[in-house]
Length: 315
Ligand code: SF4
Image (cartoon, rainbow, N blue to C red; front, top):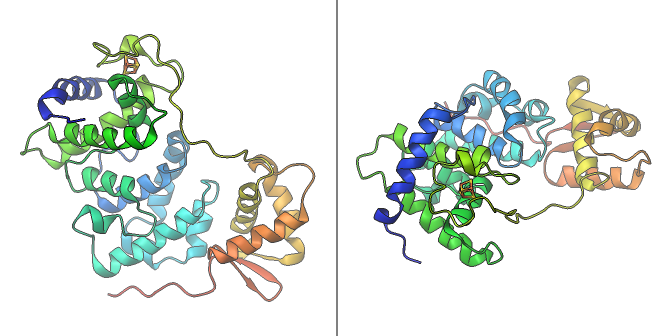
């Protein structure tokens, strides 16, 4: 499917005009600082925007720039991250900060996506939001409205994903060659906002949609399948999360092994642990977290973070 800039330019105009009138003020919008964008995008990878909106300002106040984050211990970062879930992101974010503090920001998409925790999607988000590169960014929300508006078959993910990226790139380029970085960033935010608040997963607001004209799904849009995760309650992920929350809340982020189970119980009920606590799962969770460098054993004490001290940042 060939996508020309001329084909998509009217869609782009309509979405930008709508975004200028209607967009929500979220704390990570309006910044072009690459570190701030990196932090927000890593948080948003697997955490809902309303939860990130509560935690992002606090994280940025504690670690205001890349040097501050790179110089912090992983235990401090994990403690601040606690409750956001998918804690490996925090470790990867720290490692990315160390790389940037040591070598500077990468200068192209390929090098950006080689940073720890930064895949192709996050690299494109940072490239467009911080550096003004006109590249398409396809997250779940963008994918949804593109599929509906273009009448694509979501059951053909390989074909659809390639086509969606082509369309998203064409839309990003349709603003012309002389776009300011702020215009590029507004476009990326606008595409995400449209899927988040208008072309929603359930009950899309077609009557308020700026690109409803010509939409084959208008008024009859069904759900667009997304990759689903297994049940959280009682899962190994729930046990890992409860253990990390317990360590984050503990004095000096450390617990005697004999206290781990009771501390996890206190920190687990809201996080998906079942009433019947599985001691074997606790041991598996500890092993997995040790392997990932999120906790380490110090004799009979379990501590948050890896055993090694973090790399020293070059002055
Ligand atoms: S008209 Fe409805 S289905 Fe089509 S893009 Fe807009 S909100 Fe989505």
